[in-house]
Image (cartoon, rainbow, N blue to C red):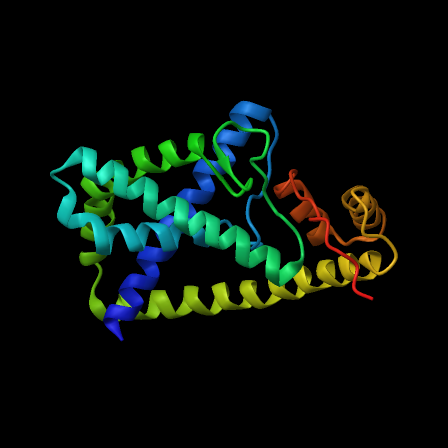
Length: 220
């Protein structure tokens, strides 16, 4: 139980740090406040998953900076690609698109992000991970378990609510797809969502401005 709770808190910490980083970048580059991510709360699970995976798999390479950088690029790019693919299959939409950036792969990943992942991987494995784990190690075991369980309940409620919202967006997309499968479908979906959607649906559009609907062949 302690080990599971420990790694959940580790996952949550890096998810929050990832959220802070992305929101800060957008604030600096685009001068707008936004709540990034699919979930309502201030965390991005993709960063938590990537961080835990790097800590478990790449710590052994922390003294080889070049290899650590390359492996971080490969690992994080793979996670981002798979996340994009699975989210598209689940909810019939492309939530981010790097097609306009050089050296991209199907618009799901790009060289610019991959290099940033490599740098962050080096910082994480060599420095940040030990700072976070040392802090968690100072918390008494029983207290850590209670803290983790409390956050886990909140997190799972958020996941359930967010998936309900995503499914409603999927229903809107499916409904429009029955009438139109052209390249204009993305603008039509966005228009419908902006006009009729709740605050939380609009939040997702704001969080993912590159949201688009892939052109599928209409089923007969």
